[in-house]
Image (cartoon, rainbow, N blue to C red):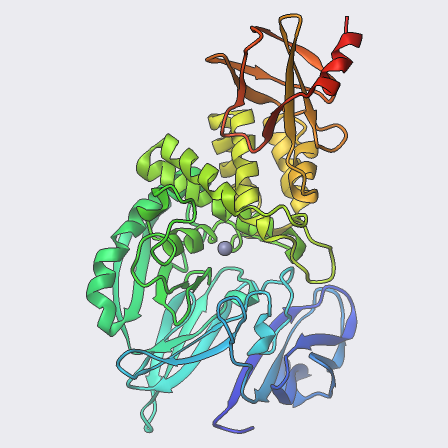
Length: 512
Ligand SMILES: [Zn+2]
């Protein structure tokens, strides 16, 4: 083991099935020095736990560990992995991740990691799969005593040795995605507040570059109003025991559970600009709101496969609309979500291929949010809000699939939403509501959609509102219309509208 570039990871685990071999992931160029396993020996009327080296085999980024004794399902054990090396440096964090070595404006070291997608095994040995979250975790970070080290959850202790190195121990007592377990090292200042939440007192802590403390104290005043809004719509903050934290990071931001990375430069909007183009997004800090929204969607509720990542990004994107509504009123929220549609590409489906560690389209953000907004207007506000609250209870601290979330929605609102989900998540087609006037009657139908898509919609016809459920064949609507009638769609539905051309209208002749 080399003292300068080395680390130790202890993994405690329960065997799901009988066996003697386990997989641990560690990405090159990091190297394993040795692995020890715990062995229990019954001696003198008591169990003695001893550590002994166990053989390992490396296959690319996979380390196979041959345990010293066979394990039965349910048996508990632990291994300790000693490793060393310089991990891959991030090229464009947080998107192209790895370790980030920077200095702040005063020249102090400033370091962190961003590894979503890439995987936590880029810097520590772990079971690197989103479906396998540890139920708790601790980080021990050793830094010069002139710097501070911040991790997830609560500070358990600090120990300084004779060589002026301080080891900071942070721990979470809740399940956590391995990519969310992150150290931050820098010249930090710390301040905090207690938020009176729906489950009692929630400690909110802020670690910011010492030189930014004044700015941060003013800017982070938006946190309590955001927590109040999210708790009202999504239920209690999911990690009261670990606290809430914003930590200034040398990259834009990331949803690191109970230690959210903040790098939005104390500006409102997304680095000072509004993704919706309406101005509504300039009234709040995008990174505070978006990354904190992930505490509910992504961190508490996690998808087993990143193909279903819309469950993280779509609901979190919609949390921006919810917060805009809490802050500026319902129409402002509508402005925001509708404005963000200009960012939708409809290039490939939102859900990616399963089992190959591949995300779907970037439309998982704005298009999913527009889909959720459409559902909200179909089922109504009170059902939609109750659905979000129940979703956060039902899937609290667990891993899910998109299919589970979809069927939960249909069941909860007592409507079959399966075709709607298929349409928006599994195709790139935006449904078109086609309309025409024939013998003084308004006719409607859905086109550019999958078989069976027949969703309810709100139309504006000659200044009147009409709610109807067109199918894929022409159907007459019960509203009087003149020849010059114009039909518009309520903007809260993410669909297109088109007046039928002559050929399409000819089909109406066959309707009695
Ligand atoms: Zn996100």
